[in-house]
Length: 101
Image 1: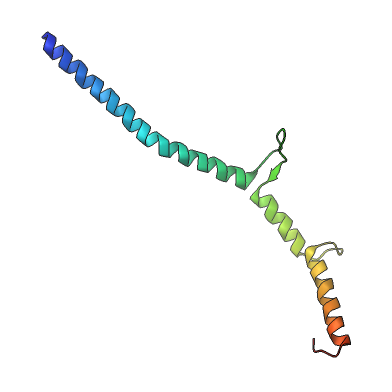
Image 2 (image 1 turned 180 degrees about the horizontal axis):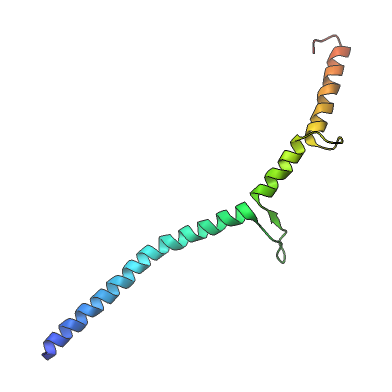
């Protein structure tokens, strides 16, 4: 192989390597962004434990469970019970002033 052919072969190999690196960079950037969004979603869904300077963040299933508990009547401390008491008092107030309930 002549000296010129060696340089051409080396240039072609270098061109292929540089092209591959550029392509990897172009593909890698959106993939990193997608991975970061996936991490954020998982942290929102599953919650995050307490860290120094940050409180624990409950995940979606835990928050939904808390909401469901508030919607069921219990011994008087649920949100539904509180709304029921307000409705009863409002109906009593309207009846006492001659309005229709």
